[in-house]
Image (cartoon, rainbow, N blue to C red; front, side, top):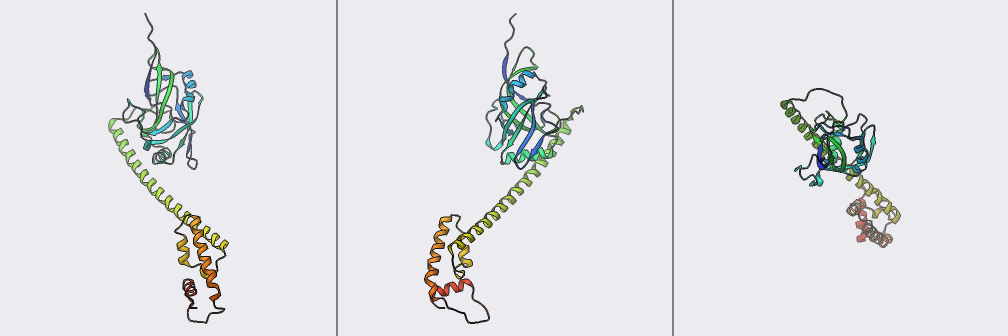
Length: 292
C-alpha cells in the first residue's frame, strides 16, 4: 500500500495561545512586544510539532499585520493598504511557542490596533494565515512553508482576550456572541471617535508649535538684519509669517532694510509730546512719505 504524500495547503489558524501574560505596549515607539505568534495547538484542532515551530520562526520576520482577514479567504494575498497595521519583528522560539514583536504604523488601522490592545477586549484576538504541511496525521502540522500574514480579528477561535487565559468555561451561546459583537462594535465606534478627536487635537497642537517656531525664527532673522525698531511693524511681521520659505523672508527683510536706510536721514531727533503716540506702522509710513 502506497503511503499518502504530504500536502501543503493554506491554513487560517486561530491559535489558542496567541497572547502572552507579559505582552507590553510602548505607545511612544508604537511597539507591541512579546506577542505569541503560534503555540503547540490551536482551537481549530491542529497541533504543531516543536521542530515545525522552530523552523518557522524566521518566516514571520517582517510579515504584515492586518486588521481582519482578507475578504476572500481563497485569496489571502489580496489585501488593502488601509488595513495594514504594521509588521512582525524579532520572531523567536521560546518555551515551546513562537513569539515576536509588532511594529505598528501611524495609520488609522495602526491606531485602532493599539486601542484594541489597550482595551484588552475579550471579543478581539489574533490569527495567522500560513502555508502548512500535514502528513499522515491530518491534525498534525509538520512544517510551515510560509507565513502570509498575521491578523487582528473579532471573535477568533482563541482565548478570551489579547492575553492568555486558562479558562475552561464552555463556549457562549449564539445570542451571547451577538450581544458581545454589538458591544464590541459600539466600543470600536467610540474608540474611532476618540482617535479622530485626538488626531484633530494633535494637528492643532502641531500647527501652534509650527507657528511659534516660525515666529521665533523670524525674530532671529530680524535681529540678525539689524532693522531699526520703527521698520519692524506688526503688519510687516504678519507679512513675513505668510512665508515658510526662509529665502523669501530674507528678500523681504533686505528690501525693508534698504527702505529704512533711505529714510533714516529724515527721522526727527525728537517727537513733540501729544495725547497719544503714533503706532509703529504710522511712524514708518510717515518716514516713507517724508511727512515727519
